[in-house]
Each structure stands twice: as structure tokens, then as C-alpha cells.
Length: 218
Image 1: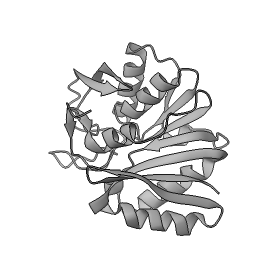
Image 2: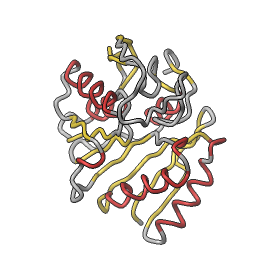
Image 3: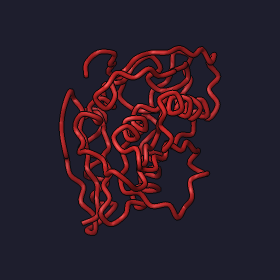
């Protein structure tokens, strides 16, 4: 899975050429849409991308590492893509688990529109796109996959993760991909301390300068 990959460290976290942040709700950059082909779930998939959304021209390296180094998702249940961008993680989850409900969450309205259009174009009816505030508080997840927005800042990142990780069901797992030189190991340590003894936080895999962190209930 090397074709069409760039080393862009965080989903929603790096500024665009005009200084715009991909975690902006309404990107100011022109909405210039184009179709690219990317490898997802063992197949080459046509997807629509645009400016103002993370990794707008290809599948980024961090997301590729996450998709290659995580266990097969459960066949059914509630699965979460936290910070969906144009949808590579959500699409992969839906391809692997067509009977599951996949929730693709992002603050970026353009990203949500792209993910929804890409799901529809590929016949993936189990994907639900939504803003964080529209996700029901009572919803619990069997799996979370995320390339989290590291560059949003430590305080905001910590708040984001603590909003969603406690929503894992007892047997649920979360897999987070973080670049090693952007604090993967310190984040793993912080999560372990913050979540406490009822949780496990482990390094699940390492590749291409990234760590995949596994989080679950003890």
C-alpha cells in the first residue's frame, strides 16, 4: 500500500498552504473536487477529494499504517472513525464489515460531505456521517479507529480523546495512529495515567515512523 501515499502526520491537524486548518468547520479554500484512486481494504477504490480536507490528494502515510496494522474489525456493531476527512478509514471499516454501523465524525462540513458521497458511490450503506455534537451521548462503540488531529494542540487533543474513548463497550478496542516524533509515546503514557487501572494502553504496532496505540478496558 505504497502508491498514492504522502507522509502527512495527523488527520485534521496540519495547516494548508493558506494557513487554513483542516479542522475548520467551513474551509475557506475553494471547493475544487476531483476523483482519485486509492487502495482500501484490499482493493483500489475511486474516491472524491477536495481542498480544505486533510490529505486532499492521496492516502496519507499515517492512515495507511493504521489500516495495515490493525486487527480485522468486528462483523457487526457500532464502529467509529474519529476525524474522518474524506473517509478512508470509514470506507475501509464499511468494506470489511458491511453489516456494521460505521459512524464517521468530523467538524469539517466539507469532509463529511465527501465521506457521504464516497460511501454512496461505493455502495456502502452502513456509513453515517455526523458532527461531534450530533452523535448521541448514549451511543457506545465496539471499535474506534482514528488518525487523530495531533496539531490541534495537546489540550484539545486530550479533551477529544477523553470524550470518545470512555464510550468503548467492555470488549471494545480503539486504535490510534500517531507519528513517533509528534509524541506517540508521551500520548500513550498520558492515556494510561488518565484512563487509570481499569484500562490498558499498549503499543500495538510500529511502522514508517508511526505508532499504533491500542486502548481497551482491562
